[in-house]
Image 1: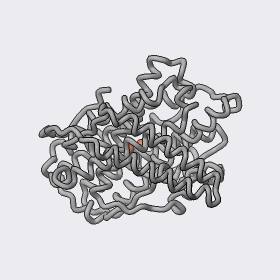
Image 2: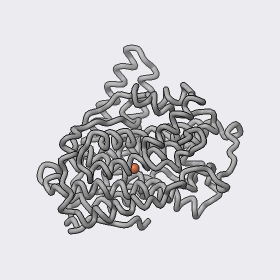
Image 3: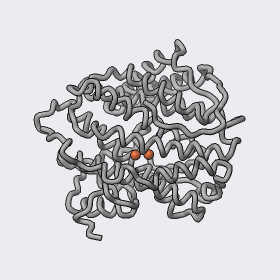
Length: 375
Ligand SMILES: [Fe+2]
Ligand SMILES: [Fe+2]
């Protein structure tokens, strides 16, 4: 295989996809992009590790029929070759872009790329450590997709003179250990909310193409279909063990739903120029994405958050303000900054608790979990 002449979009395995990117890294490495991706704050994407033996012990025979269908669909690989520039890729005048927008958009690309890569690393590791045929096959296929996604974002970044050095990230990033069940909740949700986010932007720009300020959004439909399948896989994995979605674990599900929604809200509100350029009100967007994600997650979770509760939206606004204050206090530094940081952090924690204590909505989970992307 001649790595230099191949594109990540055509890579059939995660190993190949990563080798191509490593070869590109040798030609082009920018420290700034990697450094941004290295910032290990609460809100930036994290890298995870887990108990791989426990994951490897999963028996999928109770969901065999749905499982085989999903794997067959992923093996057919409808998106092979999709994630690369073609004649639909418009030239971008990066130097002419409004500076605030440029900054926020690059931040968006770098954090998306890191998130894709974080999924890729976890899935690849699972494939490497496992012996269970079903599990290793699934994780190999998902890692393949994430490597392509990360590669494509790096293509876009390269035009702005940046790239995320993936090999360096793997070695230097801190890894957070999560028990397998927490990996299921967090990863399932991040795949489904990823789908909901990308499809909402895609549909919005389909109706308002004058707001499509960068060509990458044209690729979002196929992109989010990949994420949709990944979410389906985790729904099936959870379905194999009813304990994962009942009893005390329902509280954990509520915790993860709240954390994932609140994090999205806060992070998106840090990018006002980006959303303005897209012609999207971030409050509308958040509500739209929460609504879709809640609808989807009913396939496996017995509860959804009450996002129309009178306390929900005002508390998110307060949480966002507390986060802005934390960032300002950090910048200020010194004893005064430290004290202000502690007080703002306490406010953020209180907001999170308040969100957690909004009663959730219960419902009956369907027999079969499988769904098709309909938005
Ligand atoms: Fe992805
Ligand atoms: Fe994914």
